[in-house]
Length: 293
Length: 243
Image (cartoon, rainbow over all chains, first blue to last red; front, side):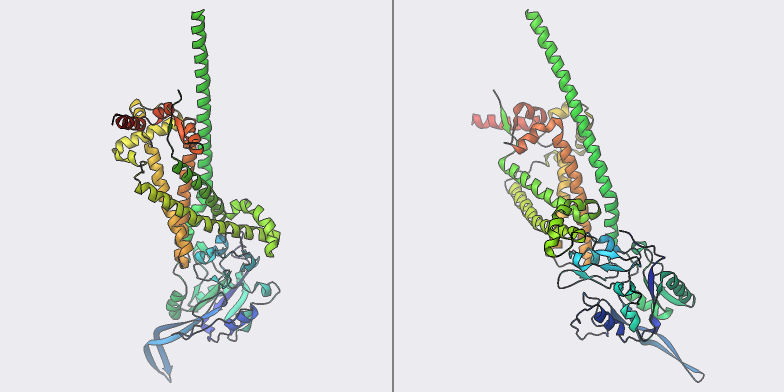
């Protein structure tokens, strides 16, 4: 599996502070990709559907957080502790630099475009679910046909010079669709201005970086990012499987060769012993026949 | 006068042959899913003719269809193999025919001494010490150790395989089961390599022939390779004859 360099290709910088939670991106994703609207239900949160699904590749996740707010009015300030705030995070596949889902797919149904878009080729998917197991962000979801689905980075649009559908419809300028190089620079600038950034320096399991980079004001990010993203972007069992596989397959080959060599030596030793025994036997029978004569 | 002795019963031979067939099929279909980049050639010839039938191109669809077939066979044979193991295991337990762990009753020091002597004998051709040679049982201590390896690997592979097929697992649980499945598989491959070395060793060829023919070996061979067992059998037969 070959991945484009993590410094090349495309990326999206998501300025979560700008998000108004209108869900236009969610609807645009459904429409452009021809996904049928998922059955929704009431729940104690605005997030609907409650998580990514085979037919919902982008979901705006609303995190309720509490923080201290300071209101200033005509020179006086009012401090409100435990003020409830809602942080909407437009969430989809993060398109990891070296996507573990693509590495885990046993049939190579997950392709990585030269731009870095990680795409499940549904016609090649066998529905084993290894991609879902390997994903630290809980992204690939099984559809009613048993195959797995997720965001394609609108690869059909970006390869024709357009921005992803969700990026194009956003009325609040949340997304900046650009080259990875520029996105990293912008993200670093935001970090320098005091915002928290997720996606620039994540675990090596996902290639150390993802192509959807999120930025949010530090005080909100400490809670909302902690709820949205795993502390470590790694699936421990999967990384052990990968490590075991990398040593076991050549290791078994070496052991098999050693066993074969020992077997050959044993058979050769046996052959020599038989020849010696036969020689000894012939000598003895010759001696006894000579004595008889 | 030719004096042969039955060393492998009909039931054992049938169970072993079924085990051999099922295990080989499971390994061939399993390693494809474990490492397609190394073993795709196994399923490619199956996928090439089938891909156009399901509407996929041969270039991209051969692997997908081949893997689908391998996965279907793996998930069909797996439970059958599990059922065979359970039935055969129960039969051995109920009829009290599990003798393979007998060498483990001896003190650990003796076991290790025998294991080292046998390893040197089979791998390097060194002669066995006389006391060890005279006390070899139906199964030696290396066989007992390998059986433990086999049981552990089968529990890991079988348990995780059954969980993957029959339980509705979360991705985390599924991933853990796959890891256990892989570990069990690697252990079973270690067992298989050691087993193949042992049975293909020139000293054990009569046993290999017995497994795939009538289960009989010459008494002379048996007295050399499992003298303690033969002494016990012959002693029992004589007692029965006296009675």
